[in-house]
Image (cartoon, rainbow, N blue to C red; front, side, top):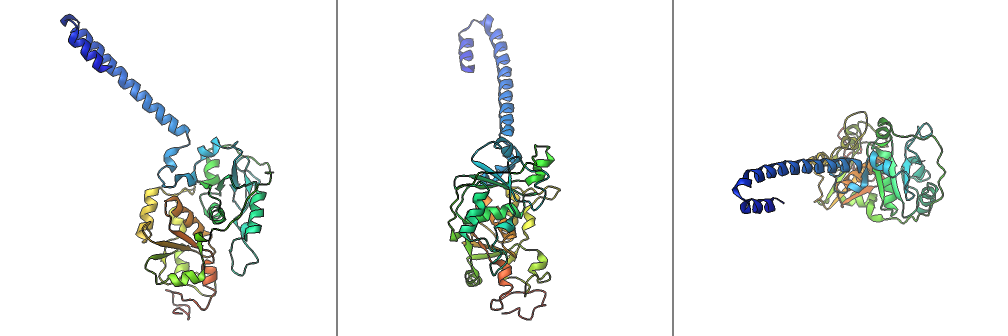
Length: 337
């Protein structure tokens, strides 16, 4: 457009030169206004697509959704919203959501507290929620807490690769004045196949062998008091020798609503504790692999492909007299062995 006008000005008579210049200035101004309008329209489109800027900075951004995304997919037949709250579901929930707690997906007859249900029982529970092998599962709790993360871990362990978490959970949804339902969910049974992926988890013997492995990082995500042996919830207190401590809740923003911290802040947080994607393996644990499941999820969100969870966690380790512990509090006579 502009090159054409410049050619025209060269060819035009001198009497028309000033007029042509004036037209060019008008056209340029109009072009700038049009460009500004296009930019504004693009920004509006991004906002309409679900607050993309809020979740797009994470390497595996598809694992996290926001409230706009949920609003846009409420009627999707292949999406199931799972409310993981212990209470409050009957008083109001995201329309169409089903409800289950992480405790209901644990094996209460297992010798170690917190172990996940076996494949047959887990499969049955998941199918009752209307989840099939090709379902997109959106899990939420009060915030971005441990309940939905435990479901993420469990489904990941049993081979389901499309599980996402609502950032900010129910509290984010409710704080924005979005639609609530008190109707009980009556989903049709799904068709789910539970096939354990053992690459996602490790056992006690594996962890013990990893203590002196320089290529492995043991990450204890319990509280500082539990790690130090001051808050004892098993026969012995303390932590696995060599483990570093990063309480799981430090991944959340401060405030009334539990949002995840931004990606760069999370990366820096883990790096400060020696947890990087370059490590050969990162083993996360807590008391019963519920809090650790949250860290497992966050590290997956950040693009780590080297993270595994110790399912038995401290509930198993702290009750076993034959494995070593470190107890900074000095309250346990069996510190060294």
